[in-house]
Image (cartoon, rainbow, N blue to C red; front, top):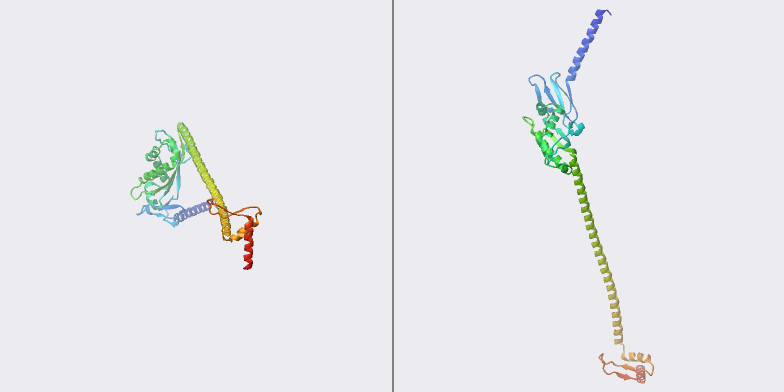
Length: 333
């Protein structure tokens, strides 16, 4: 191939490449993509509708006019922005003054998200992407309103009240961000989800005061605990004493019932014997009595009364005669 032919070949290849690049650019520029957790905002670079399109584009693929249209995406899922001491975070720590006017450092993390329904208005007025959001948040976090929340508390009280302080900062931070809304952009275009106070670096004197305060608190809590234990032990002792007393009463009542049962049984037995003797014939009793004594004994019968009246005396021979008479009478019958 001569030089003229080589030049033509090079020109042809170059032209082909240029055309291919143009075609690919046109084809590539005719598509846009919005990722998961993002919202799209369309911008027309020229034409009678130049500017931002007043609508948001959801996740997915779509077509746009090459060279004229530009699709901007911005995340609306939860994001974090950190203010840490020593450059550990994205921004340096907050440095407020406490109730006593003493400076200290606070590490703060803010969780937030963009309202996707106001994405086009936000991009049009505030700028594109996360950078525009962080610019608003850094100003709001370092504002006097946020610092003023810490200024309500002494440093030594912050460890025990950090949750309440974080809630209050979240509220004033949301109010501060909402004040940035204007025109079509409405309050709530950025939602503050939570504020976390990660760490507090106190003045050394305050550190010592906090340690002393916590020590005294632990001592007081231990004393209260010991008092509660003593009260519980006292209550247990009272309950045990009442149980022992009740047990003794039950035992005494049981013994008393047993004695009563025996006494009633004996009384009923004696009464039965007395009743049996009362219904026996007098002669039978006299005979049985006579059989049980010696002939020389005297038998006393007929107690007239329990008062000791005169007693009748009958010797054994008289008793024997009565026995003979009773036998004869019984045989005749």
